[in-house]
Image 1: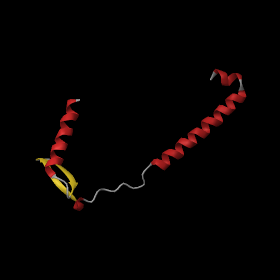
Image 2 (image 1 turned 90 degrees about the vertical axis):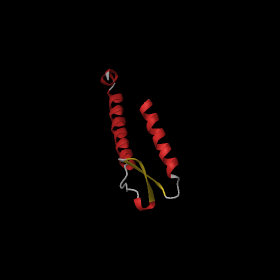
Image 3 (image 1 turned 180 degrees about the vertical axis):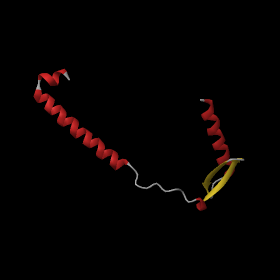
Image 4 (image 1 turned 45 degrees about the vertical axis):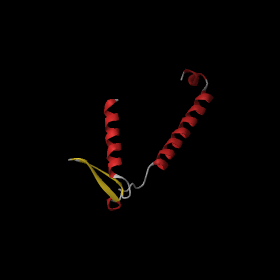
Length: 81
């Protein structure tokens, strides 16, 4: 900022650059946001009970036992770290 006070032309260019970069950031963040995020259709999924309070949903043709073991492995690995 000390350089900007000694050279006003640099200060003007700096402010123009910062103004343009903030506009670019704002445009990017607006484009990136999702307009709609729908829930999956549970009628097309199969319910797998893990325990008395936990249920997961998988594709209808998938193996429920494999899904249950994969879920429990992820749960154990998450708690170890």
